[in-house]
Image (spheres, protein in one colour):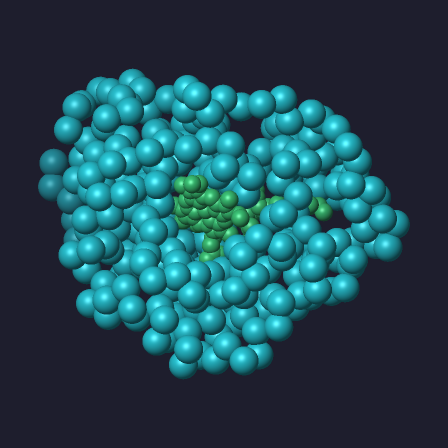
Length: 311
Ligand code: HEC
Ligand code: HEC
């Protein structure tokens, strides 16, 4: 059979008509989902904070650049097209459940990629770690995301403004099990030490979105938005508590409706417990949670009372 020219054109037009609506909203959609503007962190005087908000006005953008760059300028401020650096495919095909050694190998691999300047890190002063009663000085972070079909891997290179050395931390999400399993560790040279309860205090749902302490204390807003988008769209996962650092009984989860819409057993994010009081106090007071509205005075009182209850 021989197609006539007009027939071929008809097919082409039909295909185009089918594809156009498919293509255009996708482009617009991406722009919508990835807002480039960083929501400023402004204390809202809820009374949830244990300490007055830390005054960072003396900490300038220049201070941030100088301290942040001390990790090595060749490693940061990368030009990027893909916010998530691709990793080669997993060596053991068809793996169902990674071995602890495989997880540790990924952690060392991303540390090495960062050290060789082959990662795409976003650099900031993080809000949650800087504010409140724990650190109370600027906490400098470099955060990079990596992935292949088997894992999502995150690297955090961190120090406070007064520390000399940078610490290396990593999260590996094993996607070969359902739900995925999140491993947390500190990397010290060749040594990778899994940690549980210490990391869970803030990481209730695997990786945390990046929230800078001030809008200008971050080097790349578009990259921050893209990594946050990747983190927000992660699958719900479980936390790996290593032997010797088992999960204690955390009591009852937070049951306030304004939070459990999302933070619940079957929600987008895992339930929150009193042990998560630090990130809860900071994210709510600085206007990040709930994402779209402010709590009423009654809700603040209820949240405060719950946080202060003894288990
Ligand atoms: C005091 C709260 C807190 C604790 C405890 C904590 N983290 Fe984090 N972590 C954060 C915050 C906040 C971020 C996002 C930083 C930002 O906004 O710049 C983060 C980011 C990370 C990242 C980068 C990926 C991501 O989640 O954005 C890794 C990797 C990481 N942490 C590992 C660890 C490990 C491993 C431990 C335990 C040894 C740990 N963290 C303990 C608060 C904490
Ligand atoms: C509309 C859904 C939604 C509601 C409602 C909501 N959250 Fe969240 N929450 C999220 C998402 C999505 C994240 C991760 C992205 C981010 O941190 O911006 C998050 C992150 C958090 C985190 C960091 C741990 C994690 O899961 O990443 C805490 C703590 C938190 N929220 C507390 C609260 C509290 C307390 C309330 C109620 C006062 C609340 N949230 C209401 C969606 C929600």
